[in-house]
Image 1 (cartoon, rainbow, N blue to C red):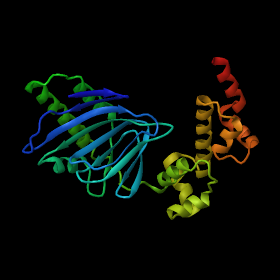
Image 2 (image 1 turned 30 degrees about the horizontal axis):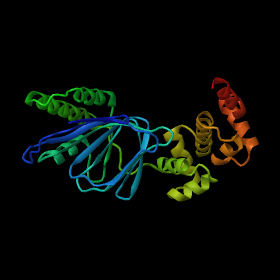
Image 3 (image 1 turned 60 degrees about the vertical axis):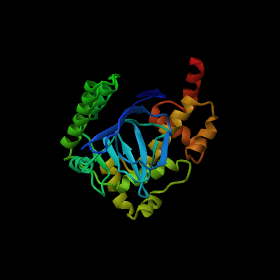
Image 4 (image 1 turned 135 degrees about the vertical axis):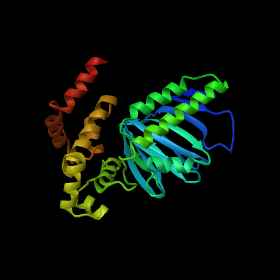
Length: 278
């Protein structure tokens, strides 16, 4: 059975066989709207999501993991989880749901462990191509079902081939701090406060941001505030002074000056250009 709606395409198997080494239950593609949330939920099977574009957050075992393109994450049967698309850059992903006697062995071969539910994927485009090909199969003959399983094994092959690119379940300190910045953009955020929150000193946090994002924590905070303000200006009619306040600037004059330094134009000029194109 196929379901198509709201940017997603889903195949759901119409048969059930608990004796299979692998039983494929569903697979699909979803281009998520901003802040699209799934969960809290618990599945009775293994679910692997492969992020193709954008960003989102996985909440699992009391941990929040910020995930981006070229990452795959696993939830096992019986594990509660929630995941949510980013508000500014929502993710697109493909997924596959399966179970069976060999399922645990397969996910371990991909690089997943009890303590690692996220792995890196060298080339997500290959996996996306396979899933999208499988979604074009609309027949329900034995030949069609065998081909779907062939596509599933091809996805497993690509994930196992990328086993060398493992990442830890725990995000590094810079990723934790960046997630906090994105969720608290309106608040006054200091580098000392961020460092204290994640148990590092100021110098350690600075080095982490340089290695992870190629910028200092203060540069990251300012850049994120300006990127969000640009998006709000382009997509809403909110007063510029309110946008300045909502994105954490102390006053409009500072906001306007920083905005022009980054984008080469003032916020008022962007707003004027928007009105002229309407």
